[in-house]
Each structure stands twice: as structure tokens, then as C-alpha cells.
Amino acid sequence: MMESEMRAFSLHGHPLQNAFLVSILSFFFLSAHGKPLYRYGLFSIGFISLLAFNTRSSIYLMAVIAILFIIRDLRGNQLKGNQKYVILVILLCAISVLIIMMKNFDFGSRLAYSLSSKDDSSNTRYMLLSIIANLPTKELLWGMTNGIQLITNKYAFAAIENSLANFIVTNGLIYTVCWCILIYMCLYTVSPNKTRYKYSFIIFFTLLNANNSLMTDTPIIIFYILSLYSLDSLQIKSIITNAKFIL
Image (cartoon, rainbow, N blue to C red):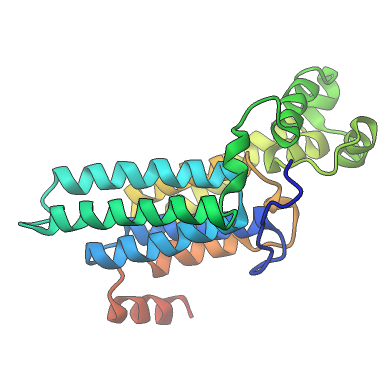
């Protein structure tokens, strides 16, 4: 790991938790109803924040999502006339600026390591999968008392940066599967936009496997629910209406 790497801690105290919140928010900005300039502008701010947090999994995930949305908008009817060319020019400029920032200011510098076993952080995640796969059947299904502490002490891990893995070692695989199903079903019944909810839950579930935010005081579920309700549209009137409904 580079000694001079830059990682922002502002917002909620740790880059991983920060990236979780910003990634969820960025997706809802990009998928909301509204002018493309607003959607991509707000998403770009979020993506730059992810580069500052230097969290590779979130950066890769949001980059893929952005590409899919760009392809959808370019092939669809949301962009008319010269808007497509304007968006392409803006994207090329944005990519150029991001490259300069990454090169000169250490934004996203951890991307240089890639997600390989040669990197300490990635290697810890690979080891964790092997450890969980080799747990005795009883402990795998029902968990262990002080499971997180036992594993971190035994294998000298600073932390288990995987929320679902934390659930498995403490509460067991059965509880973890039931929790995932229940949280999905509960939020599905109250979500106003079912299709967008399904995609957002995939992102939510993926991020749970990339950090341990669920085991901290970071309000990721509350933040997720508020985003489901209040960010269906980027129109100011719509946001105010949704906010009043929530309150």
C-alpha cells in the first residue's frame, strides 16, 4: 500500500462507510426522473467523492452503472437532437479531468493496485472466503459467540470488511439468508418504484459484500429507505412533496 495515498474521512468517519452512502445516493440521482444534465451532474459529484474516498469496489461498481445508463440514454429517446453529442463531449472532458486528478492529486490512487491477491486488502477478502468455507458445519449454520473477534485475532485481520461475512460468523448462514430475504420483502412492499427498487437492491447487496457498514453506526438502511422515497424525481416540487410524505 502506498504511504502517500489519499483517503477522505469526512462525512461519516471512514472511507468505506462514506462510499456506501454516496454510492446509494449516486445511483438514485442517476436513475431519477429529471433532466439528463441534472442527473449526470449530481452523479459526477458523487463519483468524484468516491475517488476521494479511494474505495475501489464502489468506484468500479458505479463506473459500470454509469456506462449502462449512458448506453441506455444514448440509445433511447431521452436525449434529443444535439443533446447526445453534448453529453459525449461532456463525458470526454470529465474523463480527462478525472485522469488528471488521479495522476496529480492521488484521487483513486488505490485503483493502481487492482483487485488482486497481491494487494493486502484484497488478499484479506480472499482469505476470508476460504475461512468461512472451512468453518465447521454447526458454526457455519448458527454462528459463533464473539465470532468476529475470534477470527480477527486468529488471522490478524484489522477488520472483516464484509457485512454479510460478519453476519455469518456471528449469527450463522441461516440467519443471514433469512435477514436478506426479509429485508428485501419488507422494502419491496413499501417501495413506490418496484423496478428501480430491484436494481437498487442489487447494488445495496453488492456493497454489503464490499464493506462492514452494516456492523457500524452508519445509517445505511435508513438512508436507503429515504432515498427510495425522496429521490424518484429531481424536480424540486416532487422532492418537497416526498419529504412531506415521509415526515
